[in-house]
Length: 255
Image 1 (spheres, rainbow, N blue to C red):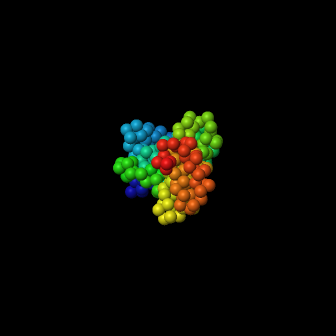
Image 2 (image 1 turned 135 degrees about the horizontal axis):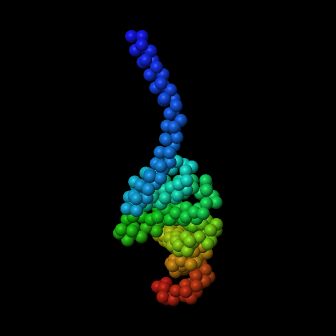
């Protein structure tokens, strides 16, 4: 019995020694598996992106970003995560990921892309689904997101005028300016209905001063002519009318 007991103790000691001896190699193995895991996960995320499953891709990319924040794929993972969040309609996470990327990587070569995606996300957040589907004009809705998008694109062009996204950003800024001008016109018309003619005229003049390159100039001038007429301000009315005649001779406001 003693021999058996001694043999058992010896085996326990050997096992304990073996476990202790392999602990460092197991740690190395876990690290190796972890590195391989990041690459494998990223390939899986890319496959999901390729087939349009951006929700799944975002979930995988987010896991990579959490588990391997300083890995060799970290920057590309964050950029793909921005796009996947955007495509899956997760606006808050898109903006948060953009802001984090720009803050942590201010000199990265793809900061212009991040800024561009911020503008696109804010611009599309302002869009109304029912307006698109039913062609209902809702120019009177709050334009704060459009203003934010305009600032995003302005920042992009200011910092990266040669960016490959610059041309599209400029076109989007023109569209946003028209959106903002239409909002001012809708507010002016609201004031007209309330017979607040001074406020309506001021809104019309604001459009002339701030959005002169938009299609809303004719509406602005017509509102100004009508408002000044109601207020009995003949000189201001005539000045607005002359500008209207010169630029929009087809206007129904012209006698």
